[in-house]
Length: 187
Image (cartoon, rainbow, N blue to C red):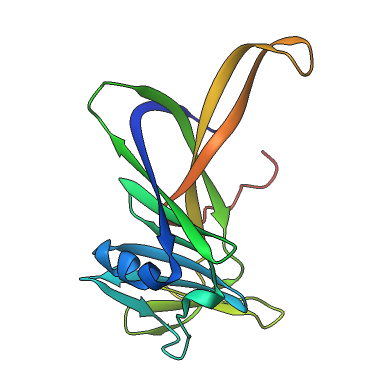
């Protein structure tokens, strides 16, 4: 069952050149990291202005980066490539009571289950042999998901479908990792 909530959410935006990108990521100080590059997806952390990836051989060169998300429970900075430049937006949730936004959290399962640990990393492996490292410690056999917060807007009348009341997801952000809870059978 998905439950919605109302909270304040402030959005700021900007542009970056490829020369500014890596320093901008480091300036975020702390948060979990979701990184899409031309040849793979990495999960990591930004800690004390240092970018930490499980695979230290990963090349963090701006020309290969497609998308970056730095997130925690309060905010996310999302950076997207547009040609040879980058646009960024920060969505920060607050409890100031100024502008209420309706949202709901939804968990998406990461492939595989925890098969190994190395320091503070858990390695998820799928039966087909793919694996991904997450910067958190989970027990062997556990399954993990990523929690997305989806922001929605309501309309009194949907002009496209000529029907009353509709809503649309206008933005989403990563919030945290979470244990995957298996659905109970026969319910």
